[in-house]
Image 1 (tube, helix red, strand yellow):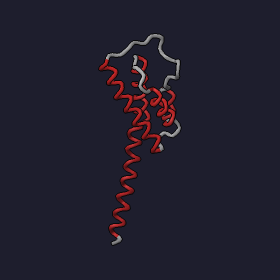
Image 2 (tube, rainbow, N blue to C red; image 1 turned 135 degrees about the vertical axis):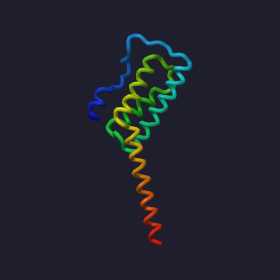
Image 3 (cartoon, helix red, strand yellow; image 1 turned 180 degrees about the horizontal axis):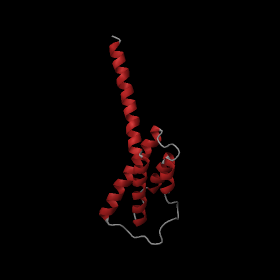
Image 4 (tube, one colour; image 1 turned 45 degrees about the vertical axis):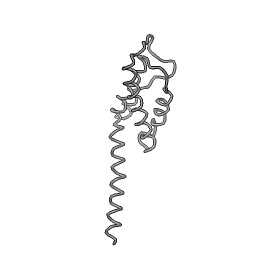
Length: 117
């Protein structure tokens, strides 16, 4: 299932855009900036935690390279596709599971250490 989600959600490559784009309002640009930061955050965490290792670095670099360019309608489409991709791949849930494993391991180690007294 994961491979089909990746196949369905190809991020555009440089120079591959819709024929017609339009500028976004200030409010739309601010909303897009927040969503883009969210994507950057999750892909950075995925890369650092070893989640979806085959694509995490590529996606992280893609969102980093989007940088501080003025947003247009194509950027809005890319961000929405990126959010759908996160959901389809279950990135947030995978990261949550990894963090729980780490917390559970630390808790167990502390309990064992405490019981050794």
